[in-house]
Length: 109
Image (cartoon, rainbow, N blue to C red):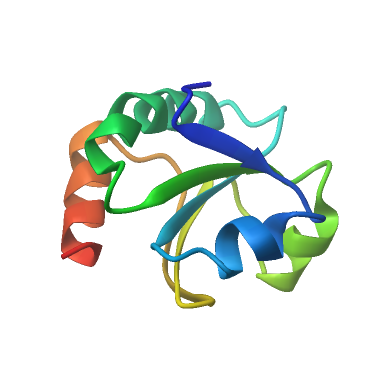
C-alpha cells in the first residue's frame, strides 16, 4: 500500500473520513475479492496526484462490518466519495484506470 493511502476501521472511520477537511475516497474491499486488487494498485498509483484534493483510504469490509453495513455496501470493490460527512458518489465493481481518473475528475473540482 502506498504511503499516501491509509487503512481505516470501524473505530477510526468517523475521525479519518467524516471529520476530514478534504473529500475522502473510501475503497471498500475484502481479501477474497479478486477485482479489489487492481483497484488497490490503481489507487496507490494515483494517490500522489490527488494529495491536495482528496484523501484515499481503504476499509477491509470483512474485518469492519459495522461501517460496511451502515453505508449499504454489498458488492466489491466499492468506491465511495465522502464530502462534508456525506457519501456523495459511489462506484461498484471493476473499473479501469482511465475510468477511475475520469470519475474522480468529474467529482473533484
